Structure formats: C-alpha cells, structure tokens
Image (cartoon, rainbow, N blue to C red):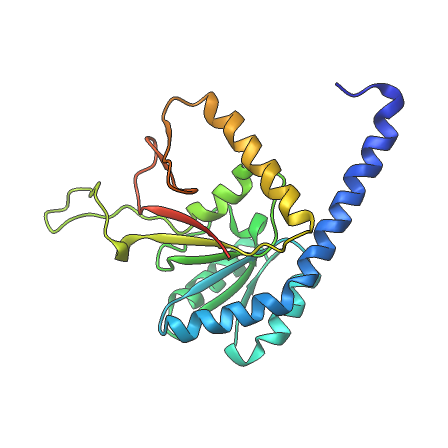
Length: 212
C-alpha cells in the first residue's frame, strides 16, 4: 500500500535504484570481460550469449572484446534480429552480447547452451524468458522426447554478481518474487541443492543457474 503523499518519494527511490543498477553494471564490465576470456579458454568451441540491460554496458563490453568479433542484438527490427541469430548459429561467431529484454522474446538460441547474465532484471520472469531462448526439446534415436538428461544437455545460466552493490538487493528481490510466483503454481518443484528449478510444464534441456 502506497499513500498518495508517499508516491513522490517512491518514484525517487525507484529512480535511484535504477541508477545504482546502471552503475553496478558498468562496474562489472571489466570483470565480465575477464570472465568471458576465461570461459572461452576453458571451453574452446562453445558459444556464449551475454545478457545486458543498458546500451552503454553493451557498447563498452563490445569494445573490450572486439578481438572476438562479438555479435550485438538490441533494438533492431525483426528481420535484422533474424540475420544476427543466423550468424550466431554459424561457425564464424561464438559470442553474442544482447539485450535481455530484446533477445528474450521470439529468439531461438537452442544451439548455444551457455549464457552470462551481467545485469539483473526487476523480476524473475524477464530472466526466465531470456534463459528459455536456450532450451530445446531433445529426442532419442526413436524420435521420442527425452525426459532424462546428461551433462552435455545442460543449459547453464551464469549470473555475475558484485558484492556490496545493488546486485545483492536485486538478487533477493528477484528470488522473493519467484517464491511468491511459485507458491501459486502447483507444477513447480523446488530442488534443495542450490538454485536449480524444474517445472512440470517445461520440456527441454535441464537448466542450472550458477552465480559467479
């Protein structure tokens, strides 16, 4: 409940939180570049999609990683996004730096099983939408949908968080909202060991969230 007299203060607080989220994203750019370089050293031949929220964060990260010829996806029209998606599918590009909101709808990155979320969203559904771009239905040799997965089938979403920043607040906020959403959905089962969540409605690769 927000009283009319408090609406102005509430707006100012939300605006301040948004600014702090942007600052936190910029503070993580260099660390993200180092993490990405190590990822490719440890996983040669793998593809990686990096989810961001602010244009300035995307542009700075692209400059730092220019030697890797990264693809970008943000506010392009659907046809341009299709072309970027097809380029990422090919063998010439293994790094995509994209807007979580823009790439989280209508895109298919099933050929990529690794994502790095650099900037958090206000609610889990936006992050879930982004993660779902990487899931796919897996069939066995007889064409039946598989319900048991191996490590090779796993999609991993890495969340790069910075201590003592707005990241910690957003992590708690998103987690709390997720608990509230799940409490009204009987198909969701919480697995005790970590942040792995399996939903009865979802058929696709196993999914693992990892904080780094």
